[in-house]
Image (cartoon, rainbow, N blue to C red):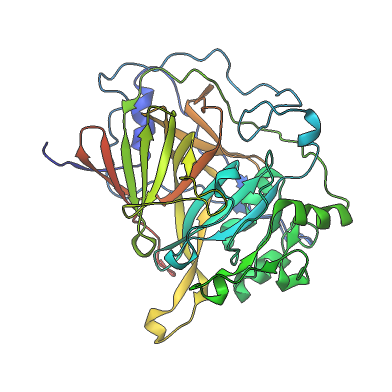
Length: 408
């Protein structure tokens, strides 16, 4: 089949308007609050790409999406995990704080521990084409998670979205200062940077692994610290994702897609009809959980397009100054395009986050949520300028591009 390259962007949402629904204007969202608030700033919604984007058809036949029964997610029963839609053995399981943990994803860190137990995994650019994971645990408690690595600017946002206690190994001076001045500090932060050392984080030497890939923790250990700080309780969630065993009608059949993150390789997802889950590989190598040796899987994989902007401080200062890497701010507030993959089908839509304590929600149009499959979700963060190429029918290749250089 003739290869076609298309730019994925905000007009993909506009295409949905043809069916008679309207997309709301980008909402204003407040910037990361500080412990001693300065005059309130308003975050700028992510701008549209400068090129004229075209999105792959919403469905092979361009049929209109159905009208959902509800406009917004209704409150969930107390024994249903709001991050996965799964019914737990008891509501008591959820009477605790979610735990977010930073995990490495460079080749020397694999296989990582505990990823298959996470309710949510965010993969995002760290710097220089390398990606890193922020994992969120609520329903399950794996015995080990890691290797634990340093935080990034996106970690000022993710714990706030999910009411989570955040564990990580440290950060650059710029990120450290931002965290110190945020509303997360010190109560919701666990890091050796701020005195949470042994007991909460521990070394597990592994043959052939660098020292930086030997730091681990787990949700149970970090909840001990949350207990000490008297915050180990169920959060309130003012906005909820929608889950359903029945997918939205229509969409585009997709059984494989990859995202070329450059230095970290291609994140590959292949749909397995037998299990109903997406299976993860990186650059052709199946990615596994070190605890179980099982392939990493996801009920849902969501590509989240967001404005990526280089800041005025550095994450990496190795070698010649021309090779130094700026920290990247990924602006996960306001609204932006999204692609939701479940059950071998891709749905076009947009993500939304109105307030700091709102989790990301996903929509085909105003009042029309995209129901996720019950189970875990991986969220692949990419810049707004990301392009797509059709490898062949039902298979897509994405190339992230569009990080705004510092000073532009």
